[in-house]
Amino acid sequence: MKIAIIGSGIAAFGAVSKIIDLGIKGEISIFDNHQITEFNDSERENLYHLEDKNKTIKQIRKKNFSLIPPKSSYGLLPNKISNLLYDSNLFGGLSTFWGGTLGVFSPHDLRNWPIEFSDLKPYYSFISKKIFITRPSENIFGDISNIDFQEKIKTPFIVDRLHSIINSSSSQDGFIFKSGYPMLAASFTDLEHYNCEYPGKCTHNCKNHSTFKTYKYFNKIIKENNNIKYFNNAVEKIDTKHPLVYFQNGEKELFDKIYLCSGAINTSKILINSFNIKDGLKITDNGLIQFPIFSSNEFNTIKGFDNFSLTNLVIKSCSENGLSNNQWQVMQVYEYLFEYLFPTYLSSVKNKLYRALKDRVLILRGYTDHEESNIYNINKDKNSNFILECHKNSEKNKLNSSASSLRKILSNNNFRSIPLLNVKSKTSGHYGSSIPYKEGFFGVPINGELLKNVFICDSSVFNSMPSTSPTFTIMANAARTAELSFNKY
Ligand SMILES: Cc1cc2nc3c(=O)[nH]c(=O)nc-3n(C[C@H](O)[C@H](O)[C@H](O)COP(=O)(O)OP(=O)(O)OC[C@H]3O[C@@H](n4cnc5c(N)ncnc54)[C@H](O)[C@@H]3O)c2cc1C
Image 1 (cartoon, helix red, strand yellow):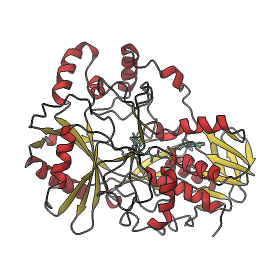
Image 2: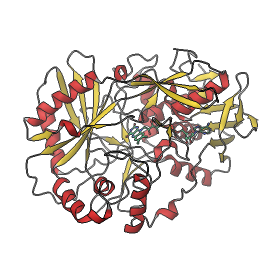
Image 3: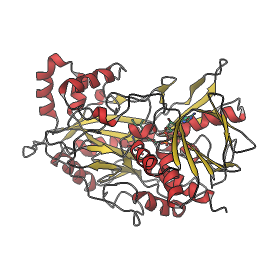
Image 4: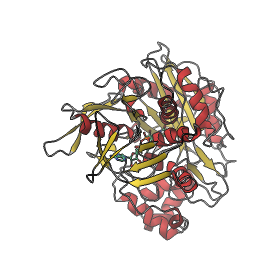
C-alpha cells in the first residue's frame, strides 16, 4: 500500500502515529514544502552563549514586532501570508513555534459539530500515550478520565496567588471564572537546554521548558522505519477523480490513500487549486487580547526558581447566560522579552527592570469564542497568487466584557492592569473551519473522506474554533480520521 501524508505538523503526527499503531504495512511518504533549511539541532546546542543569543534576538527584531514578539525557534519565525496569518512552510509546521497549551473540547465547544465528545475521547487518550502531557487541575477541563498525564508544573507564588483569587471569586457582572493548572505538551528536564522556544534562560536554573515539536518525532520514526520517507516536495493540488497528487515541480504520483495534513490555510490552498474554486474559502482565526497585570503585594520569598516559561495557568470564563465561553492563558514575563525590547547597551537598565518586575507581573491572554473570531477569505488574485482578505474582523465584545469582569476581581485583590498596555495581536495562530464537516461547499463526511481515499486530517474540517486551545483536538481528530480510513462506516 502506498500512503501519502501531506505536511509534517501536528495533524500529520496524529495521522501517522495512528497508522503506525494500526500496523498498516506499506510505504508511507511524508511530503512537506519546507523552505527553511538552517534547521539542525546539533548546530543549536551552543546557542546559549551570549553572542549567539544576541544574534537570535537581532534576527527576531528584524521582523518588527511591537511589544511582545511571538515564540521563535532560535530566531526562526514562520512567514506570514498577506502579512496577516502565520503560514507554515517548514518541517514540523507550526509545532516549531507553538506554546504547547492543550485543551479538551467540551460538549459546549462541540455544540455545532456533527461529531460528539465520545467520538474524540478514545483518541485524546491515544495521543496522551505518545507525548508528555503535564497534569492539569481537574476543575477546568471536562472529561479527562482516560488521558495519561505526567507531573504537574511548578509555579511561583504570584501565580499560586492569582489561582486562589480566581477560584475563590464569586460571579462578577454575569461571568464565572475558574482557574486551573494547564495541560501542556511540554518537556521539562534537567537536560542541556537546547530546544526551548525562548532564546534565553528564564531563570538561572533553567529546566528546559520546551514544547513538543513534531519534527523530532518524524526524525525518529524515519530513522527507525525503512518504509517511512520524507520528501521536501510542495503539493500543488490533488486529482478530483483518483488519489493522485500533483506537485509544484510538475511531478505527479498515484497513491492508495492520501492524508491532507497541511494545516487549515494550506489545505484550503490545495483544494482551491484542485477544485478551481472561484470564490475562495473562509478561514476562522480566534481573536485575542493580551494585557499585563501588576501585583502590588510583595512576594519577597520568591527567588525565581519556579519561573516557568510556558502557560502557567488557564482561566475559563463562562457567562451565566451560557452564551460565551472564553479561555485566558496566564504567562510570566521572561528575560527574553526585555532582551527583545532593550538594546544591548542598555543591559544594566534591562537587568534592573527585569529583576523588579519578574515576580510582580503576569501576562493575561484571552481568546474569543467562535462567534467572535476573525474570518478571512483566502483566494487567488489575477496573477494566481494567494491572498487573504478580512471578511469579518472580530469586535471581541464578549471577550472584552470577560476582561473587564476579570480586571474587577483582580483589582479588588491587589492586582492592577493598565488599559494602555493592552497588546493588540492580529492573529492567534488558531486556524480552522474552512472545510467544515457536513457544511459548506464540500460537506465533508465525518470520517474526513473528501474524495475516495483522500482524507482531511487538520482543523479545516472543524465546525467551529472555540476558545479552547485547538491543537490537542487536531492531533486526536487526525488519529480518529486515520483509524476510520482503514475501517469504513
Ligand atoms: C505562535 C503560535 C503559538 C501557538 N500556540 C498554541 C498553543 O499554545 N496551543 C494550541 O493548541 N495551539 C497553538 N498554536 C496553534 C498550533 O500551532 C496549530 O494549531 C497547529 O500547529 C496546526 O497544526 P497542523 O498540522 O494542522 O498545521 P501546520 O502546523 O500548519 O502544518 C502544516 C504542514 O504542512 C506543510 N505544508 C503546507 N503546505 C504544503 C504543501 N503545499 N505541500 C506540502 N506540504 C505543505 C507545512 O510545511 C507544515 O509542515 C499556536 C500557533 C502559533 C503560530
